Length: 366
Ligand SMILES: *Cc1c(COP(=O)(O)O)cnc(C)c1O
Image (cartoon, rainbow, N blue to C red; front, side, top):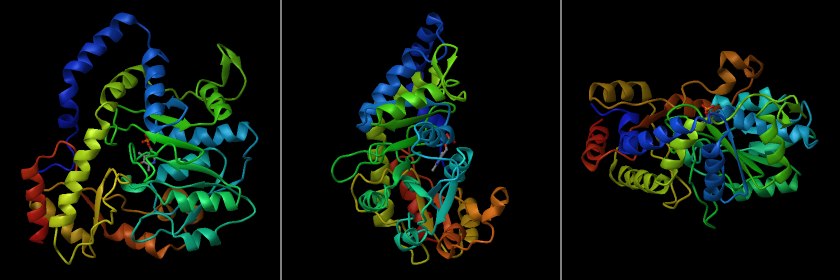
């Protein structure tokens, strides 16, 4: 049996260090917003190449709080529109709605899985204030084009970086430093995963960082003195401790992901399967290796029979979700086709070469 993802195997190498640092944490007795969170925020921001990092309880809150922060600063107002990919994970859209803004869905491109730029242009209205690309599956969106579009239309650029920890553009700038602010998740399956929930916001905007730092902690500007009607969404001290240890190996883990992806791209040769596009550089960190097949459900059954675990990212597009009925009348043919055809195959830094070869041979025999 080849599991889709073996989280235990990913975290096992760190057991001894986790236990050692956890013992020190127990001794110390400081549980909320302590040194581990502060140091992780500094280290992760430095890794991304931004001035500020603000730990959050999860990725959804990170996205939401960026927008709430801009509202407090007067840069956004209730009802402003946010351009977002129609094939993104539901959290991107919920984060926008929870901040009182309006997600405007944009058709996807069938090769990049990001914006269809023709549709993007058409979705622009006088109320559009933000563009929010998702670096889906670990691949950076075309940020040069996004930034040019944002500049031409005076939009803020907020990136959903939850699947792209460490991805780097040709100029060596990392995911998290490519917009005005970015939200990350440390959900255990992510390229940098905690042993529970967690998230972070990265930005170079000092005013925004200060507002969010306060907003995530009841809006306190100092203890028990409320400046804003904030929420409670803090990164947990224990998760920060684990994340600091794992951050050191993120580049190595991403290199291993890319090495596996390279083999998949070279050696999976089956006309029934569409493989992802990749420039071969560091702009992709292969959070997921997503292939497409017109007989996807049949393929999935075959892979299950052959002992290969798979997951569909994602089976239902946001505009067809019961939770988002206000979008049900819309049609996004490319996004809908993507959701019918995609299937994610096993790819993780702990997969060995023999297992990779087995997956390749099983797929070539389909
Ligand atoms: C995981 C993820 C999120 C949300 O992260 P949580 O920590 O689960 O709240 C948001 N956007 C994308 C694209 C994700 O993959």
